[in-house]
Amino acid sequence: MDSQLGGVPDHSWLGSPIDARPLFAPEHTALMDTLRGLSPAEWGAEAVPGWSVRDVVAHLLGDFYGRLGRDRDGHRDGPAFAPGETLETFIHRINQEWVDALTRVSPAALTDTLDLIGRQVARFFEATDPDAPSLGVSWAGVDPAPMWLDSARDFTEFWTHRQQIRHAVGRRTDPDPRPLAVVLDTFMRALPHTLRDIAAPAGTQLRVQIDGPAGGTWTATATEDHHWSLAAPETTPPTPTAPSALLRLDPETAWQLCTRRIDPDSALARAHTSGDRELTAAACHIVSIIY
Image 1 (cartoon, helix red, strand yellow):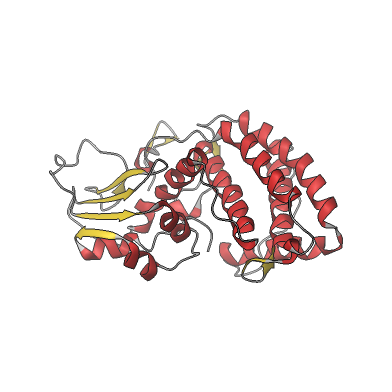
Image 2: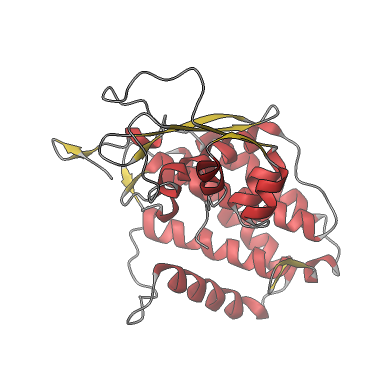
């Protein structure tokens, strides 16, 4: 989907860049506050299917080490794809291998190590060039991705895992709208890729509205080259008064849909919709994680 001019990929169809860099340190502090307040029993609570709170923390530590080793230190050793293995299968396999390897490490030791390495990760992201090429973001359909999207993607993962831990021990989603706004904005960058198989006349628009202080509005527009864009290309006909379809969600439904804590049908049942039903149903199949 990237066109190139002078060898520089055009990512305008992803929408305006997101700057998550200032949020990594506060997010890490919030995570550590959560972990240090857990009881021994809460470490064993199921956070995601098949993984306890402790397993999620071990997974986060693996992510931290991976990011520093690969992007800060230039370390290239590590697991490789097995023959015929898909990206999703590979990611799930190596994540489980890491969790299994850390079963011998106590929650206290995990917490202390995560604190040390997580602060280094925050400093790494704070110093990144948002326009530099970086890891692909498969759920957005872009590889390589600009660093601003790659780093925002990692921020959403860290935030989401913290919410999974909170939910596992009976707490609600963190109500702070500032990080949630960045999470939702990042998740919505999956819209063009979500709609990639939907053929529509150029200028057709799907609008997603998320309510509340952390919400916003995102409009995906069909382009003349049979793609979808969160930008407004000059070749697109003038914007009509109303979009072809409108999907309106509350923030809790939106982030849980994008991370598949709820399924598309459940999200659609909670949503307010108008216009083209095919488009609103398609939008509810958005996935903003490797699933």
